[in-house]
Length: 450
Image 1 (tube, rainbow, N blue to C red):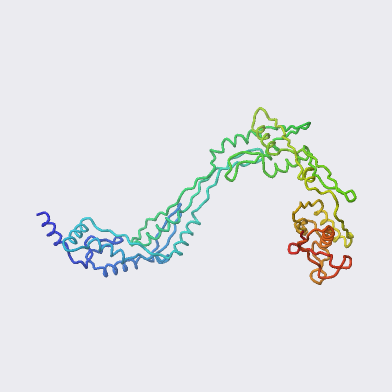
Image 2: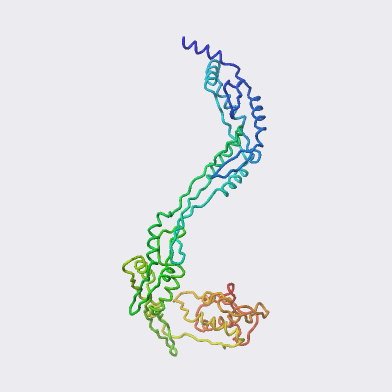
C-alpha cells in the first residue's frame, strides 16, 4: 500500500519533463515551471540589468568598485539551468517524487562564471598594490647617547587567488546590495618585535653609560662613551642581536691594527748573476678583529668590568719560504730590456704596468696572462692618456704604452724558450724591436699569454 501510494503521489507531481521543477531558483531567481529556454532567457534579461552596476569590495579598510562589464564576468546560465533541470528529472513517479522534494525543500543553484582572466588579474593586482604592506621589524636607533626602540608594525597581504574567486562570484550574482563584499587579507607578522628587543636595548644603554678600556701588550686605550656608541651595531633590518661592527667600527679596527700589528713578509726570489736565491718569508702579527670585537662587547655590556683585552694572531705570509723552495727555481733563464722613454704620461703607464707585474709568480705548468696580471687600464687605476697604435693609425688612449711592457715580457719569455699561447703583433713595424719580436695588448680583447 505504501508503494502504491508513493507511485500515485509521484504521478500526481510528475508534471511536464520540459519544465523546471517548482521551487527551483538560480542565483536567487525563481525559474520553477519554465522550460529551459525561457529560464535562460529570463536570467540573461535579469543579468543585463545589473552587469554594468558596480559591486563594492573592501580590503584593509579600503573600498574598490568593479562591474561585471568591466571584468568580462559572464555567468554560465545554460549550465545552471541544466543543473536545476536535473533536480526534477526522471521517469514517471520518480520524477514526481523528486519534484515534490524540490517543491518542499527548494533547489538553489549558484552558476559558475567565466571572466576575462587578464582583467580580473589586473583588478586584483590594483587592489593588492593599495593593500599590501610589508611588516616592519622593530629596531634600535641611536640619537647621540640615547638608545630608542622603533616599534614593530604588522604587515598584510591580499590573498590574490582567493580574492579573484570572490570578485568573480560576486559579479556573477544577480544581487547588487549596498553591503560591501570583503576580500581576503592575510596578516603578516614582523620577524622581530619590540618585546624581543627589550634585552638588546638594555644592553645597548649599559654600553654607552660609561667609558671602557682596551688593553694589549704594552698598550692601553680609553674609549669614551661617544666612541663606544659609534662602534655599536644596533639591531635593525630584522636582526635581533647587539654587536660591535659597521663601517665606523671597521675603520677604527683598521687604525688599531696598524698600531698593534706587524705585517708579514712574503718570501721572494732574488737574482745574483745567473743564480736565483730565495729571500725568506717572515711571520707577522695582526689584530684578531672578531675576537677583540667580542671582548669589547662583553666589557661594554658589563656594569662592573669595563676592561677588554685585545687578541692578537699570527699573520702568515701568502708565499712562504717552503712554498718558493718547492718550486725548484734556482737559475735565471733570460732577461730582456727596453728603454723607459716617451712622454711623461706614457712613462707613468710603463711604470704602472711594471709595478703590477713585479713579483708575479707562475707555478710550473701554470698559465700566465698579461692582461690578468696588470688588470684594466683605466684612469681610476692611475693610467694616463698616451699614444697607441690602432690598426695602422696612431691615436691616444688611456693606458698607451702598455704594449711596450708586453713586448719586453714577450721577448724575455721567448728567449727563455717558454711556450707562447697568444701573441699579437702590431700592424705597423716598430724599428726599436727586432722584426717580428713585438707584442701588442688591448684590454680585454688582445692578450699576451703563456
